[in-house]
Length: 489
Ligand SMILES: *Cc1c(COP(=O)(O)O)cnc(C)c1O
Image 1: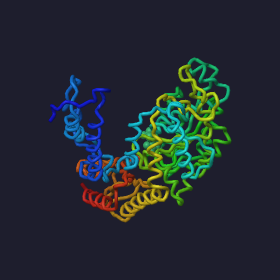
Image 2: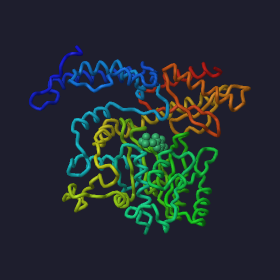
Image 3: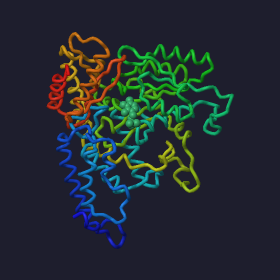
Image 4: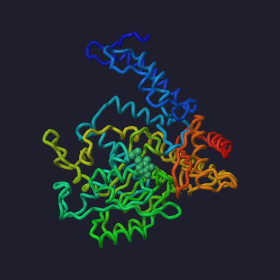
């Protein structure tokens, strides 16, 4: 079987349509079975470092191989080295779902293989992106006009947003002159909380603002940025010659899913004319639920905002949405049209060329899967599924609160539960940390669940992040059982 030669089409050299059809059906069947059985694999891959690489030939294939041989190795070598984000037991970091309509959308995207850099390089790709993101804007309850563009990740999006924030500072000409060696240039400062995602630090490093250009504002007992301290810091920095230019606030922090006080932060940004970027990568989609609308209160005043459909909107990686009220500034930061890309449309501004709104030239047709997902589930369907995840998180939170051996370590506003084991009589921090580390490692090694951790005020804290459509109450009950079993391990 492994010796079977490929049956490429003699006319064009690609796989023949007959062979494509055969393996296409086979792979779709495999995917359907896999999704049904995702819970039967160890969630966290159990392979040793280096073992996947060592199990495959170290030299590239000289001759073409059959799909049978390739798929056999996929099953035998690749699959054991996969951590199953599709598993109903996946609760580490943030649980995600590559839903059926999203997977099918990805198939069509890769089949069309268009590059959506310019409007004319596929008008549908640009216009579907604009339309779908305007649907999403309406679902989130954000006022128009709001320009949206899809990037691969939030880390890319925040880099672009902060580049725009820097571009918005008047009279500095950083785009033209750069920042190095300019003694007349005051040092730039941006503000975020201690719990802001590390992508903000990386963006500051990349943009030449530097780590010292970030001032981290402390957080209150519920892990929210302290706005008074923010304003104090800005005034202090101004007095010392810094040039404050941006604030990054978060709705749904990575560590605990806490919600910074956006309206008060927006007031401060307006007073000092700072760019406000709001990171709602994970939790923003909760605003689709009517009773959660309030979480984005104040975001109508943000200059930019990110929400990741690939986090909690059932979209296969990757799909991160950057919204901005100031697309002209974003474009001013990035637009650069070489002769070979000049075209009639860019002269009129009637339709956008999305390559103008970021660093990447080539752009995948990511809007197709998101459009299909929004249509397939509908707003009602999405709301019901998000509510269910939140219900499951509250159920687990309640069991933890009622247990003498566990305690919750942070509020549970969404579908992330932060907690630790704390058996009666054990009050030494190091001892508790070691116990909780053992619990996490034991659960992860057992293979049914995968959880991750954070550190809150020095305490090793376990995180159960519910975000996969296949996670049901049965899994949460089983997870709670395992936890109780290991409470004093
Ligand atoms: C996950 C997350 C990010 C990073 O998202 P990527 O798309 O993986 O870059 C940023 N901020 C928050 C709050 C997140 O939860």
